[in-house]
Each structure stands twice: as structure tokens, then as C-alpha cells.
Amino acid sequence: MKELIKTLLTTPTERLKNPFIGTFIFALMALNWRPILYMSSSKSTILERITYIDKNFISIYNQLWLPLLLAIFYIVALPYLTLLFERLTRKAVIDRKENQLSLKLSDLKSNQKTAEQESILENIKANYRDKADLNKQIEELNKKLKNNNITIKELESTIEGLNHEMETFSSMPGPVSNDQPQFDDTLSYTEEFEKFKKSDLYPFFGEIGTAISRKKTFPKNTTDIVKEKFKYSGLLEEIYDDESKDNYNYFTVKGKHFWKEYLNGIKITESQEAEDDDLPF
Image 1 (tube, rainbow, N blue to C red):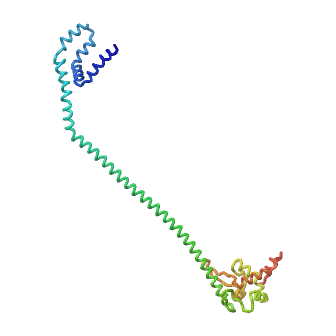
Image 2: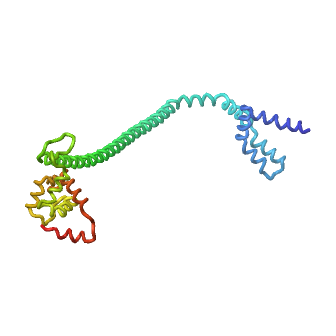
Image 3: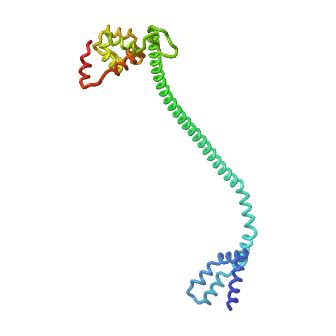
């Protein structure tokens, strides 16, 4: 029984799926909507409704020929009409697609130009950063060069002082030896220092030696005669400093030896400072 009912329901459904039958039934219902509406909504008896419909609405034209023509038109003629419309609108469709493609190409070219300009801008920024780094390195190198020049000047000043010291030392009497400092042939520095202790310069040597060792200059109350005698005795030499634009006094090799002998011969006592202040000038 279930299979029979299922078969009865399936068969009409399959028939309705047929394009011709489905179209014919749809056209038939569309053309006869008034009798269908009257049949379903009228309050008359069924017999009266059927009689009224037969008398007023039944027509072979509406119930057969017109639905049949509409179904044939839908099945046969409509595809050709659709094809005709597609051919008629083909150029418009192609032009519209070409226009859309042209717009896309224009957008792509615009994006490409934008990307190129952005790339150029990034390169300019990179070059600017590189130049800034190079300028910073150049500035640092200039600072190093300036410091090196200062160091070179200091070394040149030191070399100049040493050369002056060597010239002063070489001007002292006595033969020149290539391996050792110049001495008198018969007296060493120690013997010369013993003679120096008996000279008129020895009483000034303590204060002058301390000032030269610490400040590279004579004490303020030292007379010019005493200064000149110390210079010409070969114990001190005067060197001009280009940077400070001032003269400084340094011990010669002989002067350093005498100053060492002098310090070694001093005994430190509590009253030493008072004794040093009593040195005559």
C-alpha cells in the first residue's frame, strides 16, 4: 500500500518536471484563474458553481489552444529568442568587459607608478642615512686627526727640548763619547758636584731645584744674574713652548745628576721646611 501511494505521488512529480507538461499546466492555470478562484471561493453549491463555470468560462481556446501555444513557444521559440538577444547584446557585453579590463589595467599602472615612486623615496631615504653616517664618521675621524695633531705637536716639542738639551750638553767642555754622556776626562759628575758645593750657586740650588722640578720655572724672587749663571753652568736649559707661548726651564743631564746628589745628601728633619725658607736670594 505504501509503495502504491509512493508510486502515485512520484509519477505526477516526474511528469511535472517535464518542461512541456510543466509549462502547459502553468499556462493553463494562469489563463483560467477566474474559474479557479470562483470555484474555490463561491458560496454556491458545487452543482451551481459547475453550471456557472460551464456557461461563462469554459472555452477550448483558453483550456487548450492558448496554453498549448504558450508551452510550445516556451520550449521551442524562447531559446532562439534568448540566443538572438545574446547576439544582439554581445557587442555591448564585450565592450563592457573591455571597459572593465581597461579600468583594471589603469589601476594596475597607477599602482605600479606609486610603487616605483615609493621605491625611489626609500632609496633617497637610504642614501640620506648613508650620507649622515658617513658625515658622522668623517667628524669622528677629524676629531681623532685633531687629537693626533695635538699629540704630534707635543712630541715635536719634546723632541725639540731633547735636541736643545743635547746641544747644550754637547757645548760643555770635554771630549764627546758616542756611547755615554759627555764628561770631563779627569772628573766625573760626582767629583764635579763636590766642586759645585763650594761654588756661590750651591746655596740657591735647593729652592731653585725644587721650583724647577715642580713648576719648571725659577722662584719669583730669583735675580737675573743667578738665573743666567745656572743656565751657563750647564745645569738648566730654557725651552719655549709654542702652545702656551711661554718659556720653561728643565734640568740638563748634568743638572739632574746634581739634583739627585743634592737630595741624597739632605737629611729630613722637622725643621727642614723652616730651613728651606731661610735660603738667601
